Image (cartoon, rainbow, N blue to C red; front, side, top):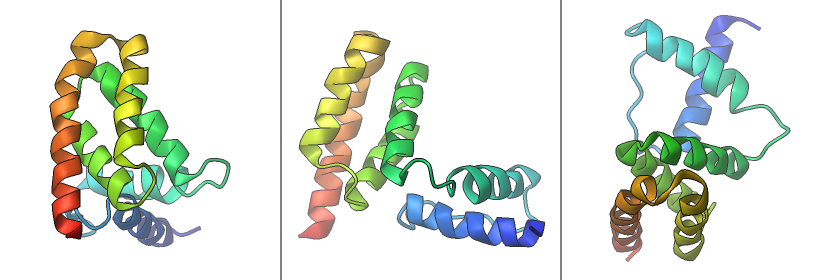
Length: 125
């Protein structure tokens, strides 16, 4: 498959994954972004064995373990907007992750998640 096809497929998946809330860079403006579009979103996120929700759940674990609050917020927002998780399920993800990655890593994510829940609910009203 041509790299341009992979990039276009990746861009479509990127827009789907992030509900259009994360602005993509133009093709060719960043080697890093182009590689991410082709490999991560064009190849990995489009594989059929796992659903988009499954992939997002895996990301929640990795992101929480790394303590990446901003990234966790982006993923939480997208999961809510894509109807992959309800607010209750997202809160339960935090409870579950606490047992594996620890209270110090998850505690700051509570405010991040509640903010995203409130913002998405306000957008829907």
